[in-house]
Length: 570
Ligand SMILES: [Zn+2]
Image (cartoon, rainbow, N blue to C red; front, side):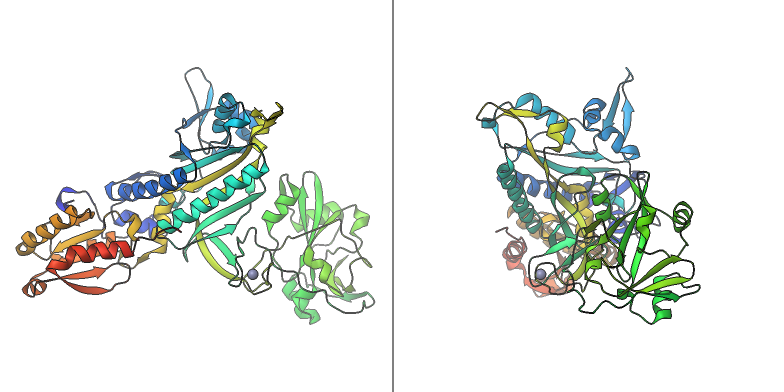
């Protein structure tokens, strides 16, 4: 491709609207332009990247037994009413009506649509397993679309749905997808990790997220270097500490005037925050529920929400004070039973002895409080936010922390959608059974941004070879080298290399700046100095390495470089 005939409208200024590197660089490199909040046009350079990602995703989905389909983006409301998600989705769903005033939505996801399709088509266990996938636009009306295509309202997604006759089949489908995803992100040339994840609103009990590692990533990942454990921090847990070996001391009431926070109380009493029990209140339905965590721990509201399984909110201390007649800042578990409050506690509470907590009396705390002797708990659960340094739940080694961008998510759904939509097949005994389902997403357009977040510097993008819009950029310093540059261009093209020849009548400085910005993996500079010695100057964008190649070797060197930098999946 000749640059002069291509369209790459690069910008020198950093666009004010962009907050993160990938958004800035995609605008500056002339890859995207905003059409409306969270809606972007992909220009030619970006479209080439999208196509490369798409091709690898399709190859691996097909390899894993996926069959590609294309379902309507506009979906009728009635199938969403049947699963109850028409209401659950709330304002995040783009809704519209046709001329007959019938309700539709723009698909945020396709569980309802695909389950209805399979329900009407597949009758017998003999037709299973079935793995159907598509790559198309999805729509979510984000309250705050931002970060360019990273959190857009219209985005491109690959979604595969598996239909199996039993749990074993689902496990096989899930494993096939896990392996396919590992192959995809390896082949894309990205550093990534698969982590245990919370299943959230979509339902199901087992799920993994695939994260492209990047310091700017929105997700925090905790992982173990000793074993394979890795989880996002919404889901991560840690090994429990050993129970403190201490005799129970007599309970004591201590005067703590004006000391209402964990740091204040512990400093005032000269104890570690790990010796204190924090009592929080949540409103669950109409009820107030007390939640206990260790003084130095943070409550993980996602874990708490999974336990409640219904809408809940943190109750402000003033509201608790009024409803239960308790003093703000001095609440504790002892005597809460009399208020008929249900008590939920983090597992670590079990390991604590002789703790400090609020006395449920203004300006007083209790010392040497002990579980079972002084208070009891209705439900124990893992409720704390795990953090770096915590012992690994599998092998006790300290967990490490890194950040990532979520680009894939795989779920075991079970019968959540097939039951709701009455999607049944006949098994060997002729009995009607709901399909056992899984769903498996990849944010195709998001991968473009994630790849840039992982691979950039102050000058621009550094594309990994497998998804680079072009593999080689040829840059003649001035028009006198154009003929030689043209020769190299033709040779490389004949060898099947994707080449961009910068034949613009621009100053060399401008061309170098654009080359760094758009980030083509190999830049071949054809200049008077090199040519005098029969050589070209080569810069590897990813590493900054500079090389000199004899003219006669250019093609073989390029092919060797491309092969070396195209990772193969095992
Ligand atoms: Zn471990």
